[in-house]
Image 1: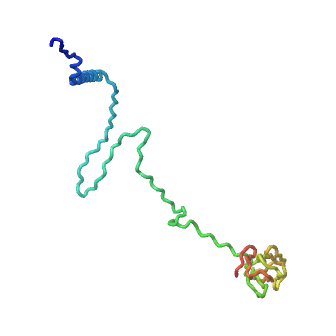
Image 2 (image 1 turned 30 degrees about the horizontal axis):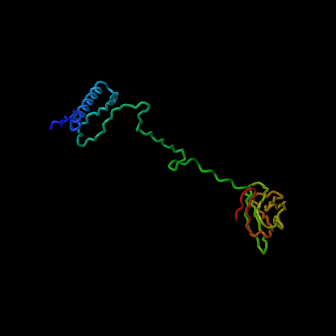
Length: 226
């Protein structure tokens, strides 16, 4: 058959028909590129190295010897360490508390002073009492006594917030002057009371609701008997 020609395969078709050749060429190229990249990185320093951290020396502790039996062990004295700027070491010693003096008025101390003397007795004393009581009113009295060696005048004040004063008089002595305003009955002696003498100021009240006054005083001193 003279008319038939044999077609020879081309080089491109041979490469395409053998995939392992393409893979081998790719691997060779990648290895070459990796070698070039490593060489360029070693040739220059991309990142700056951080400076080494400063070292701090530790305080040296003194060597301690084993304690002898029966001998008290004392804590070792610590060496002074580095001081941080801006801070100062604190002392662990607390200040001693001040001791209170006996004159400070404490319960354990001595007396602060002698007790105050009692107030002197008033020249004229008064004792309140009820002479008689009845429906709607009563008759009361303040018995006055001069405790001094000289004649003394006196003034009696009684407080009855409610009620009405009917009459007031001094029994067996010269009369004085009286007034009843806003529930306060005031009576002043007409003559001075002799030394050691006693006299009774009597009064008649109605509609007070009680025979006990809110207050009773002779020359500012409270009456007894209430």
